[in-house]
Image (cartoon, rainbow, N blue to C red):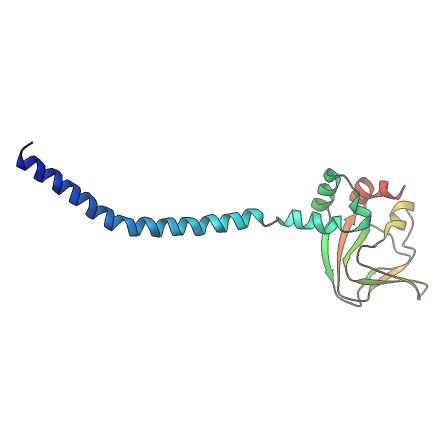
Length: 166
């Protein structure tokens, strides 16, 4: 090997070392950003979707707790969620019934002919009598506290929930 060959080899090695020194901090920064992104993505993957949260909330209501997963999924997709302030009349005695309600959170007062007959709270349901018997509402229901209610229309009630009342 000649002196020139050795010198060129040494220059290439020095150039390679120098480029590594310049690139290494950038690579470390990139690896740090990638690690942060991976951590963020893992957190997103672990975070339940809105549908999963709704399914879990419905599953805490005793009437729905024993439903098969497929029916609970349909229920979660079909049910509307409403936040109702205290003092709101949800259903009125004597009117036609078209919805069924499940209380996720809150408290309601049930009255007949103006007299309180019961109160219901988290996990309880109301509005089923008019739908099951196809009669007008048998009571008035008013919220006593801010309430979170699941609401099913008559068709969804009949196909998904009514069999639970048999």
